[in-house]
Length: 141
Image (cartoon, rainbow, N blue to C red; front, side, top):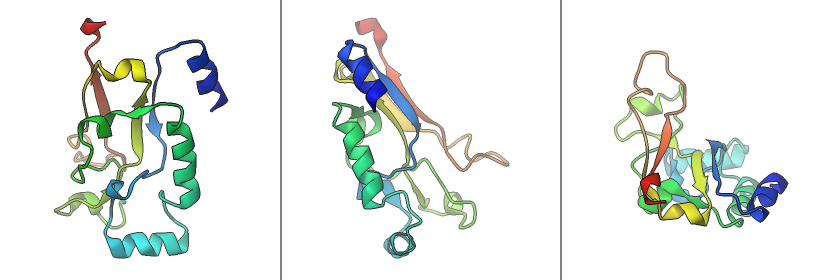
């Protein structure tokens, strides 16, 4: 976090992305209520209070979740799927949105879309994560 603070203090525009292993809101949990409660009980989750507290601390640096910017209430797409329970193969799919692309306020107006691509995740022997993406229209700059 200190590095982010340093870069922001220098006036840098930032895009921070990665597998954060945190589903920040309940709408980012798509594994069903029974499974979510079991995961919390066993402390095998990506939505423990301390995990969400860390994410909240990160977001307090005036960062915007680019996916939620465009799809604030969506519960249709997730970025991670458990191989064992074959959540990607279900309809609707069962997973978590734990991969994120965040940006600083100066980039929000240039963020034209964001999403999660299932095509690669549907291939034979894929990662348990689906690729995430954000499109910025830098011609506006």
